[in-house]
Image (cartoon, rainbow, N blue to C red; front, side, top):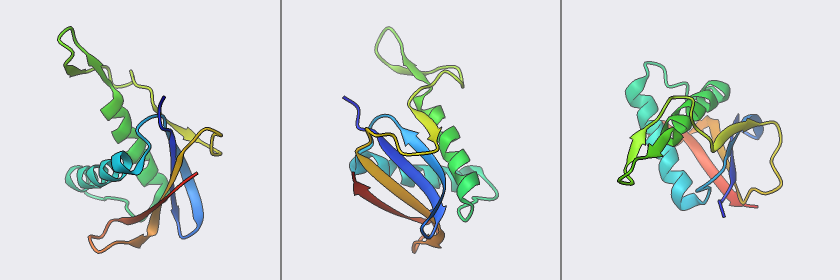
Length: 123
């Protein structure tokens, strides 16, 4: 069974965007993925939008969708698929009832590296 989670993007206690992740929602998977996402944002953009929850959430959905848009070939190797041929990440208005973890990306508070602070809790 998949470990589902919600990744909230906001400022202070205000949530501006909710992103649903269908699998690998436990902290040992999500936290490194978020750091990798932040690194890619720094490398690939002129304007990180680390201080803008809505734009940063949109960047995260695109990044995560790209990660999920892969197929296994006949040798069980991951190969790229069509850009829109993905599942596993989406946008929500409310938390689904079956999530196990909730994360908050605080775009109003940066850590020592200049990236948004991340907090999380088990549901």
